Length: 355
Length: 160
Image (cartoon, rainbow over all chains, first blue to last red; front, side, top):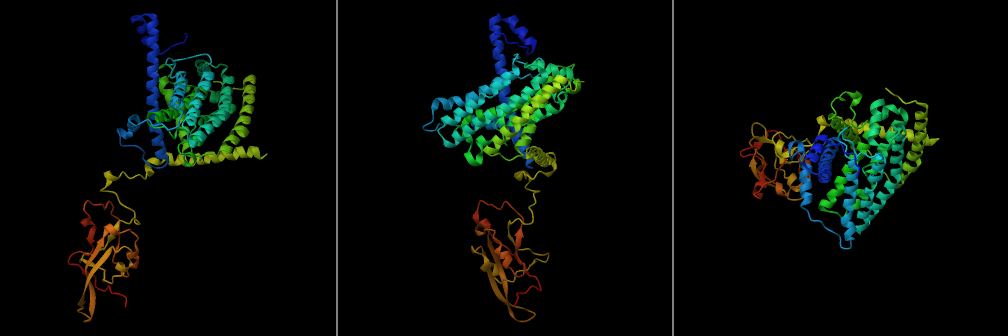
């Protein structure tokens, strides 16, 4: 396996000093996996808390503020409650698929998490097709949703799952094409090179001006649809389908779906940050001498985009199925195709803004 | 050509919506309407229309406005109000008039419909804005509204 690892060189060197090379490699991989699992759980819980607080402020409420200072331990308490609950199964459910489905969702979002660059050094898996890998992996999650809806033997779950499939097939196109617009500008699919290109010539949203801004808008719309969040939360439309595809799930399996939704939101925001806002780069290079601050800048930008998605959620009403398809096939897709041509012309004529 | 104007209008209305909710979000600190109830029990003030329980206001001379006409008792659909009254001779005119002895109000039977307050011809009873009226003992819910030793305010008369 030739995976370039650059997480904190000290740990790496120390591990190879104290044990033999094969053992050290295995230990290193396990350490990275544990770190990402920990990040997954922690970020999921924090994002749920953030969502609830922000939703409360939009509605002039206070939100959870009792457990711990300002209620930051509320979601941990909720998770503990879910762990202690019984895992129920419907009578005629397909047991194997029913139990398998949450893991598809979780594994897909964990795999996508692995290629994200948290800073220059904190980048677990920098493959040369990074962005392609991200798109490919982030759409695996929908298999879990389809399986979960199918195997619960419940009509609401099935309708929700089918809607999810339809939505992902449609909007995957727009996500892919808007990412392609930026790849034209970057000239590479490798995430570290995309960021290096932005280090030289400014963030892509400025560098690519008009087509980049159009691509960013399309990316945010399609990305929100990809994560199945309001206003595209047809798959769990409470007024029509109960809870949608996870109607029959309880306890920790429900929590997996719930956490994965928030991690997917984090991943979409992270892709947006990498492609349009320079990843871990600081604005105007003000903290370029301190590479560790890259983590802070990266998380700040990602949380900014996450906030934007939450803003969407608490503003816009849910779309109908036909409106969903009209938006994608009649508006986003043609605009996107035109936008790619525009970006190609701009790159060809060298009309990008560089400074 | 409505295709492009649709896109323009779509984006414009989306941004309008976001600016509305955005204003709410960024001013949320000042306008939060949540009451953190058990903590602010002492300072919490209910709004004027709140129906806590029926009370009979008394002035500083321990005088109320109830003539004992029993219209509230008749208006109440649940039998919440019981008035115990007597006839006494009025010193000025020498006629016999009704005087209340006890205006008994069973909060446990009250549905807060407000018909008694509408029926009262002399505005003797009104809503109070107190809250959290539950009790561990139902005898505490039976209240005598007129204070002990109180009299009717001079000049308040039944309409003949």
